[in-house]
Image 1 (cartoon, rainbow, N blue to C red):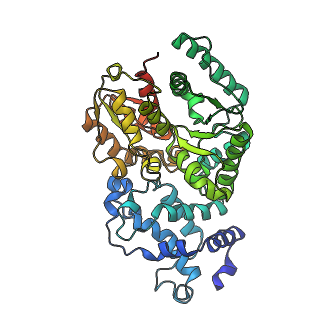
Image 2 (image 1 turned 30 degrees about the horizontal axis):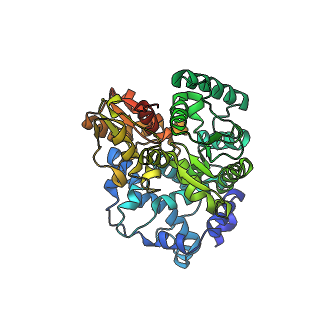
Image 3 (image 1 turned 90 degrees about the horizontal axis):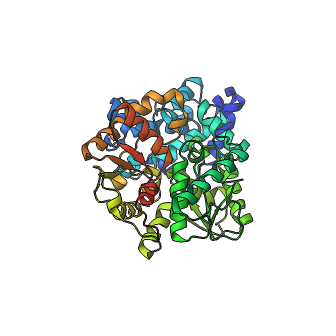
Length: 433
């Protein structure tokens, strides 16, 4: 461990965090890769560039060589012999470029790994070390900072958000022809507390209108918090466990404060994963309330007859993009298909689909990291060609990060399609009684 004495304070902090997390799970995944090569063709970065740096096994190696250097005897004594590497400026620079700039943490590689290495988990661990080194890309870090500082990742002032909800409520009343229709705000004791991706009030207010219309048709008992409504948690992408814990705690406390029975997560793949499945681990306790995604809720509305749809209102061909964190990471696969098949007359699948889908390229925090914009769009060509082959005119996806990426791919690759959320397609097919 002699080299540790030559480390900077930040490097020591990064290695201390690494050591703190060195449990059986981490050791197992660090030592399991057999370099069989089966993961090569699973990664959209590698498929696009054919650059060995983007082979998932080589992404794992970024962390494994540090592990060997500081946590194995041979790594300490004969580092070059075993492929160990010091944590220094050179290795850190390479790690940043690969684990932030060359990975969307989509998990397709882990699905195809012959021995089950959890590659996104190792990438996130490497990102956590880079948090300690202060090496998170500026755009991603500022997104996390905005959420911590203001309560939402786009730093929307509360007054502006309230104004947006008020005029959307007025539009809802005109659309449904009912002056009692509402978008309830900060109401206590409701069955549902509904979250939003801040991109909705900022850029996509029609997504809010669509869900308000669905809730109205279902006669649902619901509300939105104007204090804490952000379904996203970009600290999950940056690897900042403390920030992720704080954002999760705030949402947990808001559900408790408003005494809601069920927290409904808006159409956001990573938000669903971060809150529903990672959140209890971050705050070290189970939620005392129910948590579900909005696509599961809407599917239940359809099954139970609480809403009625006329698919003839949507006659254009519709295809579905599967968000990686919702589908591969969360197992919410068939509900969005069920909803779309009831909401349109011509639904077609991309190939491949479901857990084998290709990432659109916008996950892993890529949308917030401007320095990697060209890679993000270029790797998205694979998804663009998938869409083109379906002949669809509408691409639906239950994730606003995916929406943003797909809109850019639509423009760059001249796909000529509409990009909508699943709930927008459902709302278009509603029959109001």
